[in-house]
Amino acid sequence: MLFPGGRLPLNIFEPRYLAMVDDAMAAGRMFGMIQPLPDTPRTANGPAIYRLGCLGRITAFSETDDGRYLITLTGLVRFEVVEEAEMRRGYRRVQGDVSAFRDDFAIQSNGAIGAPPLVSRELLTGALRRYFEAIGVDANWDAINEISDDALIVTLCMACPFSPIEKQTLLEARTDAERVRSLLAILEIHSRRS
Image (cartoon, rainbow, N blue to C red; front, top):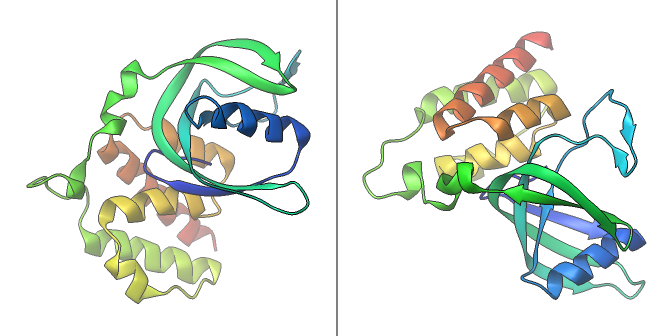
């Protein structure tokens, strides 16, 4: 799942997604990602989808000898689905509205000069240590300690094996502070389950 500021490596091999990447490369190198809604009836175009997704820009591209595309999609801004458009070349399209999420473009929290951190680093790493211990992950704490708070939060939201609903909750957080509170709560819940 893609979040603003995150980088998602993708191995594209299905013909419809190869066509989508071709179209994106020809027109601004951008496309959006949206999760399917679990346990909902299918629409004419496929599974029902959430109303909120993330627009990304292709920032790395290579083609393999067997015709696959290896790309990196960098998250730019969340968008709300206004309506689903007609399918093109086998892939789904939507009209999206980013107006409610303009702050996603701004450098926030630790990235802005003089901005206070969203969360104490000790609180975040403490919750992360308990979570990793609970799921049996041996983390590289030197690397974790060198990453900025913002980058760590985005990376955790994208990379941790949370459920699709939990990840969608993180994406839909109205503010960065709300996302951090939700992330801490999810880490603690998983720490207690194991």
